[in-house]
Image 1 (cartoon, helix red, strand yellow):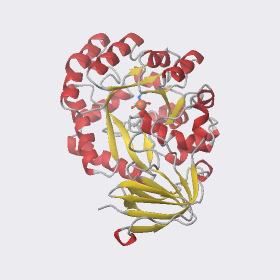
Image 2 (cartoon, rainbow, N blue to C red; image 1 turned 120 degrees about the vertical axis):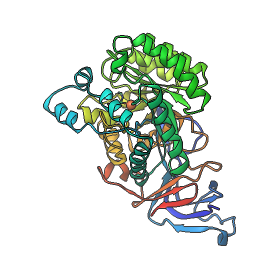
Image 3 (cartoon, rainbow, N blue to C red; image 1 turned 180 degrees about the horizontal axis):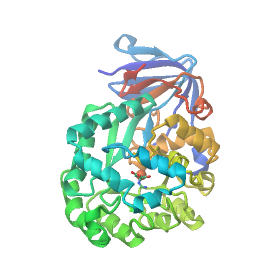
Image 4 (cartoon, rainbow, N blue to C red; image 1 turned 60 degrees about the vertical axis):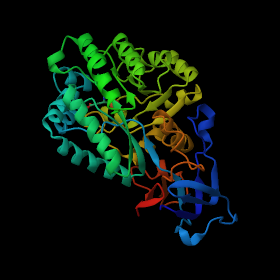
Length: 413
Ligand code: NIG
Ligand code: FE
């Protein structure tokens, strides 16, 4: 029985809402000063203002005195690749020397490099290393995350990655939303036969993934020299036919029309978007696509940041994610994510908090259950060691999260 009263928080930053927020709405965090939140049986049952009487029998509840601390919804990370074998520290050195991410990929490094190590790893090895990454994420306040396959690029290894996520979803406090990303890159055995590799993903993989309910979403790396717009369209439409929700890695390295395609297909979220065109931004705003921005990737690749400010001004629903992966962003640093989003993408602290709570929940179809402190939602919350959410980007690169609460249970204290 997870019953908890969190009393007298300097701020209850509710982020209240049950769907993604666009444009100016992103600035409203609906903060209650000196508020109290009650979780009954793991679900938020009361959100009280200062002075309101506690309407439950306190002796059935654990209590936290949150005086001087801000209470927020647990963070939701809507884009990670946290299950993988091996590392790519050599490639990092090459990039620092001037090699580009794509040139490393074209000479057999990058995603395909991680594919070798992921194929060679046992399911148990993948489970253990991925679990450690989740432990680190939890300490930073992430209580729900998305995770992608896409380092197998063959039947067995893609399924192995998805099974690891399914097991971790059961065993670990963090909730996991799984995404099938078979077309993440073309492995050596399919090189030059990209259309056939897409056929393999459509005809063999999607039916398996859907039948075994191994993923809720499907994703593809739509990029010059990776998968074309037409291949992406074909794969995503087939995925939708199998009942999967759609995501797309779009306009990351070059302007390629990925955001326009995202709008055309009304996908759930389009991610990266460093090079999204004005047209693409407008189209995403109109079609309600969540624009998921990954500033740790731009930082790690020394690329220009996505135009977050302009996207919000164009009325997009903007979300943030870490993109944790062994190549382009080997980091789940939530503190740095907030700092970069505010300092380099010109989001206000309020917009950044919305982007990593209710909007990121919307990017993985969870805005009805997590991402805000609202009655009826899961009791997933974090307490900061400071009295205001404004410390999140301001305490640069440092972890403000003192307590993590998952379904009303105190996990980190
Ligand atoms: O989101 N861009 C494609 N996929 C990942 C990187 C994967 C990797 O380099 O291993 C991304 O950045
Ligand atoms: Fe990614």
